[in-house]
Amino acid sequence: MIAIDSKTQRVIGSARFHGYDRQADEVEIGWIFLARSHWGGVYNGELTRLMLQHAFRFVSRVVWLAAAENLRSQRAVEKLGGVRVGSRPDSGGRVSYVYQLTVSALT
Image 1: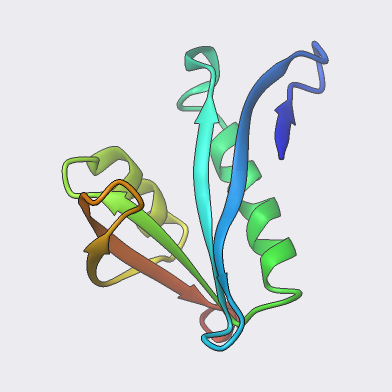
Image 2: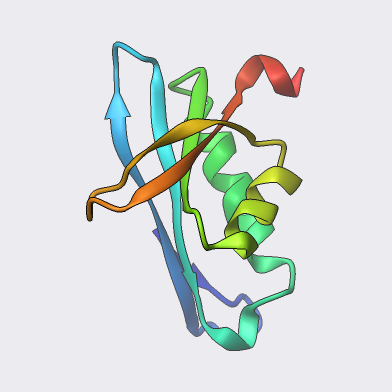
């Protein structure tokens, strides 16, 4: 998905879903990339909330992977309600922390 600044109509970033697992009833979200000019504002949170809203129409659990050294991403996921549940290698083979949020945690 592409993120567009509604005021300027310029592309300011992107995000995507990954790793849909039908049997586990989950999908990985994140991989949000924003222009530095849009860091620290409402954009990341709003984009993530839209992704969660869409994902929970189809699965009961979303997961995020955050690199162990990426404290900024870890804090952002925790702020959204994500809970660290373990670790696993990411697609590049690096160990990342696994966070999850279930639809039942939101109700």
